[in-house]
Length: 374
Image (cartoon, rainbow, N blue to C red; front, side, top):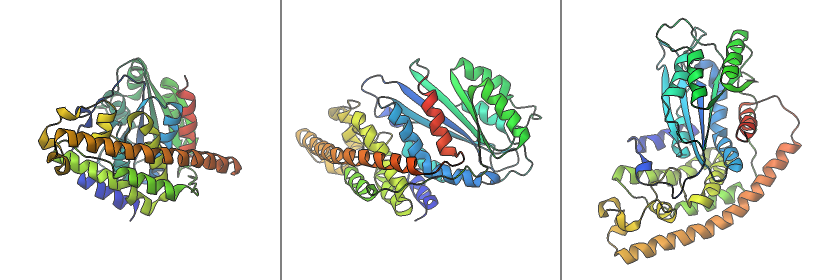
């Protein structure tokens, strides 16, 4: 099954927009890292977009490795131009990286043709419409990624100079990633990066060579994560339960098309589980929500429980949750050891590889490494 097909199947099942935050909250305040990509999705960006689909999990993991205690929220503003299928399409900042990944799989490069694009509107949406966290212990970062300059002749647009003043007030860093070598775009991108207190990054038009490193541990990692997913107990409204059930199957579907991406996904979830006990991202799993302190079992209404729990007494429900949590912890201990070996293997393979031209994923990861330390 192709990655595109995986995304379609997952999103059809999740057609209802759901707020997981209403069902689970963090047991204690954590630092927050928020990263949004403002991505040109016109036809010339096809190669870069396909590469981004393969590397989004490794980018998320690179954030987590530097900030293991943080809540990580990622979002996407896809943009084209007036006259295309859409001008902007927004996927808000979320801890549910599985949902974001499924949405990214649906993004297609299409349209364009008149060169300038609606960059101004896209940046305005990213800075002013995304739901950025307002507390002080948050790092907020935007990556503008495109190959064509902004339309400066659209009277209705808020020009990027104004938007970037707001970004500075909100403590949002704005980086500008240039795909290709267009001089007029480079001038605008350098100005945007400077005004946004960010970095100007030049990469090849197709995003550069995305290095996919398969490891001897991938197969066993995927098997273990699939076993962990069997410990998930979906709860909440029926639509949310169905949505959570589909997440437990997403890993297997990704593995059939892209084993390295599935292993990246499992590695990210395993590292998150050290704090949250989660097996899927974004909430909706009673085991992790109760274990993390975000939900009390006796506060869940009977009609929000799956049939397997609803017929049990409160004591038996608690016993079942504890059983699944114990199984999950045991499996995660094995998985943590494998993920550590995988990390060492991947690092060694990267060190052996000859120096290559810059690429989207490597430049984003390198930029985050610097900006998240500040």
